[in-house]
Length: 477
Image (tube, rainbow, N blue to C red; front, top):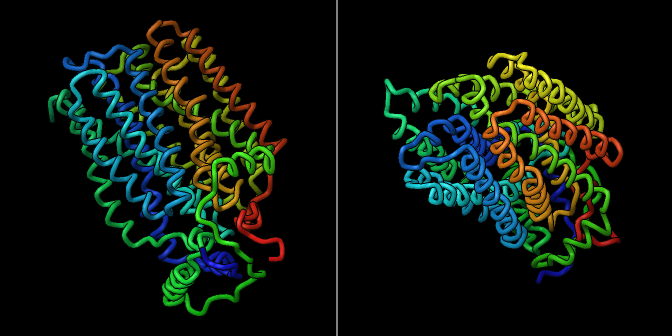
């Protein structure tokens, strides 16, 4: 292992003006959420057609179970690939995970029964789950501190760009005039496969995280990559501003044990761990419960044909996309604590009102969609901020694993239970039962808002090393 050394790599990366390099990072790595949004929306929009497939013959409960299979895969992938990401590096893993996604999503189109469909959904989720930990950590480590919140929320929000693409695709692929719906829903999964091929190409130009390299003793490689990035930005922006702050001293390490991860989370940062669990679990329940089953609500209670579901998913997706894009800047200016509390709280209150209105039969299909569009304008920013929070909360050596653990726990508690519960409630056919599900989601969002207000911490404009000291950083730095 390399000897102890001092480095100003973090300060040099944080002082860079925004340029084409950063846009490349956002485009090549942020497309993960486009793929996830595409997957979730395709299955949501196609739920009616998949349920009616003569070969699959799924019940409402089984549709909910396949959504849970996808999320279980995401949990497993996040944990396994997150562990590898901290050991082997960001670049290797965000290539492997997109390959897993590519193969699995295409295979989904060849499903022949419930079990094969659920299995391929599980594998697709594993690829996406691995992407969350590898990509989130890489983005946060390459983006300047003053733009980290805005960028992270916008990137996470592009999930809904994929959702809009999925909704629009379903309108064509489920139109019986254009194509047989039984073939259409199968071809829909090829859309994600085609996108992921272009992702592989773009990621060839993204370097390994210099921050990860420095903690693993690869000082020369980290310095070379930073010099290359600086030269790229300088050619575009002119002379760079001077480096601010003191260098840090690093004792390199090959890996961080799971025991160290646990001690850091629950002894050094117990409040941040509690906050991460609450934010992730609450938003996961609300999102996955509502979104994975909304097509079933539209077909069951509003008699909307399966081929028309995309028209209702499209505005819903656009509202979700605009939330992080419009509100993201305020997480870097007003601050994390106020904005996260506000977005969770507003979403929770509006969800409770909408759930009651649904139970009373006051809303048409379009009015129900408009209500969800407004609610998730705020909830989308809140959910994106949850990923930002868990990424910023812990030291660099365990960042990917930290993201993976909180994503996994939040998804298990909130995401896997939600779709199955709502699938069963919808199959029961009673609006009042579904209202109680919506009220549960609203309560969880309000609990998350209160937890953020109590335990939230300031990370806006601060370097990652200042927010959470690296485990390999020495006291004499």
